Structures are given as C-alpha cells and as structure tokens.
Length: 309
Image (cartoon, rainbow, N blue to C red):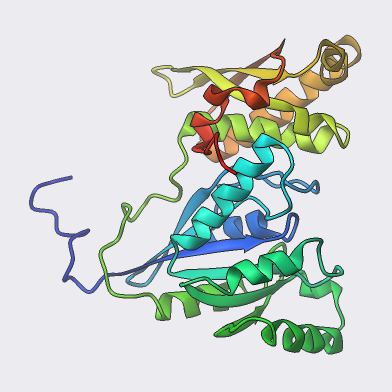
C-alpha cells in the first residue's frame, strides 16, 4: 500500500462489519455467501457438510465493507475432522459483529437444533434470522416458523430469502450495511475472498467429487494443489493430488477406463477457468494416504484446529 493512501485508515467515514453465516448442514450457507459476494467463493453441493473450513467473502455496499464468514454446518461431531469443522463454525460466530442463523424453511427442524439454539443464546453478537428456500414453502407456514424461532432466540431482524434464486439477498445486504459500525475496511476494496488461489482450486475439484461420486466416498478424500505454474501468455498449469483412505476406493474415483476422474477434471477445469478468468490446464493424480484425516499436516491449509474437542 502507498504510504499516502488513507483508504483503509480510520476516520474517513468507512464502516465495516463481520457477519457469520451459521446453521445446520445443507441450510444454504455457501449458496448465500456466493450470492452476497456476487461471485463464487465457496463450493456447493447437494450433500451435507461440503464446507470444511471458514471462508471469508467480501461485499462492498456503499461505504460499508461487509465480511461474510461462511462456516461449516453445525452438527454433532464424531470424527476428528468433524470436531475441527464444528469448532471452526463456532469460532466464526464468536468473532463476528452479527451472527445470521440460516434456516432451511423447506425442511423439518434439523437434528441437534436445540443444542445450536442453546449455544446461540450465549452469543455476544447481534442475532439475525434468515429463512432460506422460502420459494418451496407456503407463506402461512413461514409465518408460523418465524414466530416459533423468534420465541426461542432474541433475533433483531428476520429475513425471508431464496439464496439460490437471489431473492431477498439485496435487502439482507442493505440492512447489514446500514447497521455496520464505523471502522476501517479490513480488506482492499476489490478483494472478494481471503482464500488462497491454490486452496480455492483444490476446493473446486473437491466440489466436483462431491457432485459426481456416491454418498460416502467424498467424505473419505481430500485434495491438495501440488503445483501452480503461470505462463507468459496468462495460462496456468495446476497439478493436484486426490488422497483417498483405502486402495479399494481408487477404482471408484478413477472409474472405468479413467472415465470418472476425467469427468471430474474436465468439470473442475471449466469452473476454474471461469473463476480465474484465464485458461487453466488441470492435471489430477490419485494416491492412497491411509488415515489422512488424523494427520495434523492436512489441517493447516484449511486453518482447522487439529486438537479441537
């Protein structure tokens, strides 16, 4: 930054707010984060627990910088990785100015919701309720649900939206900007996410694994970007490794004649080129790394706490 640049200094009328998006798995938090930012910053799939770490997305709304923290879904953890994910979600909520509880209005009350409510009761940040997927629900049911949830937590506002269809998102952002406290922006005005490109690329490929593979295997794999080479013409070569837990899983992810891994690579490459706005050459390798979910080194790139309880 230029020494004479005061754009991120206090006292110049800027406002800034950190907003945590929390809720049960598959409530639509990542879809909402993408809609709020206006660009893809978080991967999305129909499967629960797709998001593994906190992701910050930035939206400029007049003189306010809104920093949205997309968190992993809050559920009852069992594995070490699950505990680290849930810990990251609560950490995002505790560090925020506003916590938005994202609730899937089209489904019954999620498991362990009572525990989530009890935890939010002790929150020091402002609480807002965001009913998502309202296009799938009768209005009378929405009113009953709103009353029921507001009776349980002291929400200052309730919003009814469809993140997928981008309905109600603008109103939510406008209210958050209006309430943002005075303070300097934490990121440059043109930045949309805090995620490193190498990790983002790995996440894009993992998204395709979630979409194209069966119910269980995506949770048993992790993806790392090993090489990132940029050329003078703007093209980029990306090499990634898909790590799985058992040799028997190798045939599933590769597919007959390599069809499955090729399909994942091609779809991820298209997504990467659109996001990076340049031609990408993606190469994917598959290796077995037994018990990778209990390897502390795998947690560092996601900023997850290996020792989370």
